[in-house]
Length: 220
Image 1: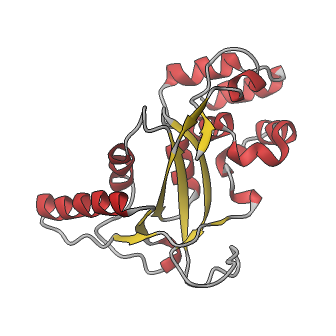
Image 2 (image 1 turned 120 degrees about the vertical axis):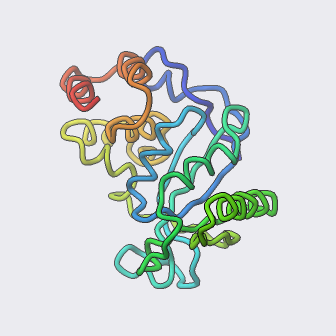
């Protein structure tokens, strides 16, 4: 799947989004409520874009209020020249309750592999975790069937919830808001993830109203 590279941190928002195309790969994880993982992965260098949605079940066309047997998941599109699938699994295993099963399927821990290679890698990591800890791992490893994108108000939730900033960026990007590399990074940064120096560099590169930049700096 072709997508933008990690944006060059110079120039306007448009300049940042117009990076050279690169081949990306995609990973899908269930880690409880999808707002937090969306932000955590979005702050990572090498992640091109994130989106949240529903997967892992059989109910056709799920929605947040009619989820059926699906799980809330985050889908991460990344540049394999900068990040490996194992790097993403490091974050996945460290940031959800893998030792206990969720009482709700909606919030279960699950790796939804996109191919046999991902499934084998995830299963290897799962087996290694059990061997290292002596605990049973409740998190499942399955093959992704269909991913259903969640409603707009769930996409980049931390950023949308930031006063002034979310509305301004939503107006700039419109339908592209959820798939922007910049919004993925900012969504992670306003949630407290990412390197402070990197946050400052990105904000300085953005051609946005001063009121928006001030709110971002306040959050960082």
